[in-house]
Image 1 (cartoon, helix red, strand yellow):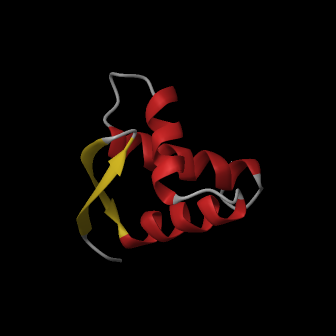
Image 2: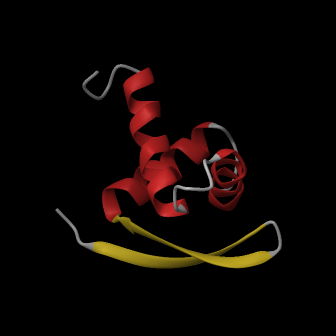
Image 3: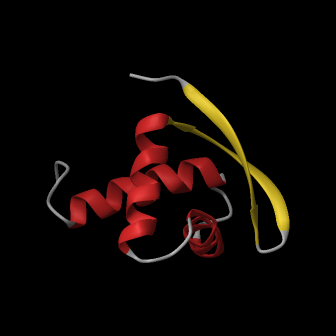
Length: 76
């Protein structure tokens, strides 16, 4: 299992950073590709809809988990 890697990106015109394990980052990239959107666009979408009490990195992990559960790939 990989450690957490901090990555910088620009969403909606401002720079931000996310700290994710490689597995979550790779899955986000795959999900973005499936939706024909850029990674930054997917991150912006998650950011816009997340509970503000949850940091962006955690919201992205939860998004990936929810998507995998929805598809029956992760345990319910």
